[in-house]
Length: 536
Image 1 (spheres, one colour):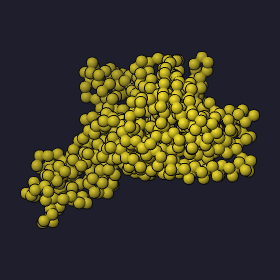
Image 2 (cartoon, rainbow, N blue to C red):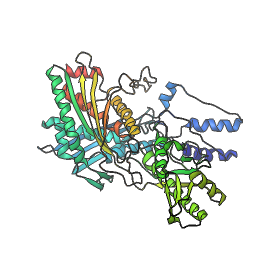
Image 3 (spheres, rainbow, N blue to C red):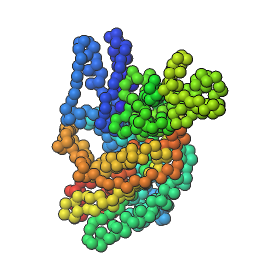
Image 4 (cartoon, helix red, strand yellow):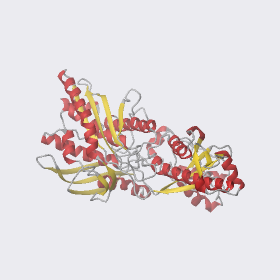
């Protein structure tokens, strides 16, 4: 996820051995979700051994070795007291957030603890809470160290506040949707929380208004199932999310001699389809078909500086860099073409891949403009670094209808609906793909995935025979609605969506199971044996 950081680290290490020209190539990566942000020791050791031996060296580890040494995720606990009035309004929260940091590695523990503080600062979610007091503790243990995993502090914050709302609703006998209506914030515009977090924009009441009929339809179906003797439940959750962090993203855009457009991005996609979105952005600026745009990434020799793909930032921050580089290149080429035509720039317009003189109708293609630019001593390219001064705050409401098998305790998800406001959606298919995959990851945390250690600290779940992950059998159909009620203050207007569905789906499913069995649940994953005990 971070080839440019790896290059900097290798330069510092290998410069002592006379190696200064270092190139890092990121191959196609089938997913990362945060675990490949840090530079692992082996990445340095292999390069070091290659230099001192003068031989190419290849290293690979086994699945079990990888699961023992690649960072693990989550593992926060929150012991709290929450006060509600008789109408279900949340008055205040006091508690202690405890995070298992894993192995005591100071260089990593600091970032890990940062996720705990993020969770604490986001803990009031999208609700009006007058008082909050949270103590945050990080504890080093002999487990694998904890690092970023799809959400990095925001899933924990959402889980804690959404559990507080639902437990309060159950205690007071208030519908879970209604208690959120009573506590939701009003519309926000760069609203600063007491904890210092800023929400850039949001229309939360409008989101609830749109989602409410769908919620009542799920309740109707739940009650119909219950009338037939089924254990059915409905759950909802509202996302606490901040995304698209800075400090910057880079892009270089060229018009090649054949007229094709080449985009080099400093972001480092690993399976999200960002190249498609970047091609769309450049093609809109240049008014050509996206098939005329080539997108390159993951090679430190292609662009001087780069960043990483993380925090749902690539399309928003990286796309803004592509947008600005493309726009500036088009303007530069227009000036060059107008100079060649011996006319003023304002006399030339750009339409459908051509520069056209308004009076004579004479036109110059992109390929011709590239050649003219080169012959005039100007490279037909533009590099731009887009600086992200704040971050975005996407939000959404997810809901699910589930059925619990009385005999086995297994949970079957009958329907899942997601209402997300992630600003402008550049590519709906890519965005919806993120929702489908992300929701399943969060569902998996609620129902299946768990890292298990022996009392002595040995990892038991060190391969996919012992560690449960969802397959196509457990996969679900998601009905997704993009609300687009509030956009970001960037050229693209998007907010980021990669982590949002994972953040939302975990408490959504737990609330649905809780509703089905009519018992409070305080543990995850909700294994069948746990459900069967609750049903006794």
